Image (cartoon, rainbow, N blue to C red):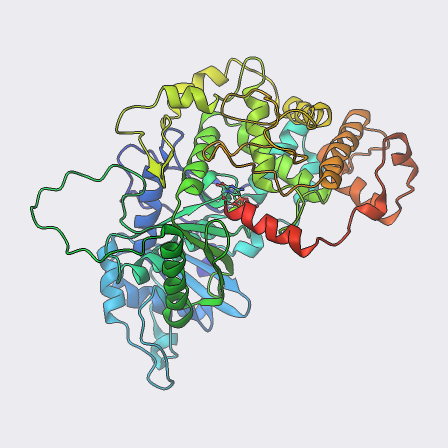
Length: 554
Ligand code: CTP
Ligand code: MG
């Protein structure tokens, strides 16, 4: 069975400052990939993009039969260092990584278009292996690295693993480990970024596509969306390098209205995605949002994608969260537990509306960790003060996004705080339950609860675009539910009442929710303050949805 071999990692292509480490996924014997603690965001982006530029995806009929042939064909162009298999809907796909980018370029140059049907003759890293008589005779002698299907990672025995854990802290570690975005999930998203970047760079040769959101900040779960921002000049918010040549491009004047210009660009990009880009379907243009975006679905990766232009603040926000993840290891499992609690209690929603978002919850976790004694995470102000000239300077659309981009500076300080994950989770729920949302705002800039700047029920300051409230979509009913559900969860975790070996700790939270939904009058919950069940699942109005879409892309 070619899929049984344990995957090994290429030692080539390591970023210089990084030590690559491998880790065995507990539920499978897959080696997943974890990057060094010291690695800064830009190095990670560079490393992943290079890996994606060295990779192709091939759709095959029967992966067991075709893997050897695909490996053989690709090996003519260079050494195949990694080979993955995944299925998406009824498609069987192989993801191959070469040792070098040049090998992938040469392979793509050797590919042709299907002559039998009318197709758009655009090149992409998404290929198809046509049936060939030699298929069965391909050599099986080559070594095949492990192949993993992202769907398999939605772990069936998660409940069992959680019930066998020794503490809530251990449960939180297991939950994070079992639900985090798989290695193939990472690679497919990076390949999509590189594919779009290649398509659009026909127009703008320096253009960069930068992913942001939970996918890159460390909090990505299997199935998470892919948020991308375009940097047209490729400077990515940094000072442009000194120009040596006296020759500069003849200019074409931009429309004298930056918003209109951005909308025009997004329209053109949407057309390119819709008409020429392999795999991009269901293309929607959302031009009236504060930051115009194009949404689409990628049918070879199964990922929902958003592409925006004009502002890179989302990217720098993700970089900030990425740094917090590197600063203290407890951040990620705590955010994961909080996000799961939010989903279990139906506080968050896949559909935009008046419910709190994962991003808002994440900022609340940062705020909470900044306020522990001793502090576990630094405030943004501290990081701004320590920013190194040039190295850390970033500016986008007149927004200054300069802050220290070296997590090492704060890693030791957080260790002075020895609180366990369980303590932190319980204390976070207590913080939510007791915070004065009526009067106070949440701001990770100073880590202090300042007076609110507007009359919305929830005020969570956007730390980079400071005049924006990330929580402005949340209405009073939803905020009340957040507080009540924190109280419910605290009650369940602290009393441990009626909890047998298979129904304790985190496991009691979704079950309690299930019980409550089936039987709102469940006696177990008569002890704790309840909210009106009929308010729980009311339909969101269109206005609220519009507001939210705007808030999300702000
Ligand atoms: N963002 C922002 N302001 C908002 C909403 C989003 O700056 N009001 C930025 C954040 O950097 C956020 C990113 O846009 O991480 C993507 O938003 P979204 O996809 O809603 O959140 P994620 O953090 O990616 O979480 P999820 O896993 O739910 O997608
Ligand atoms: Mg996202």
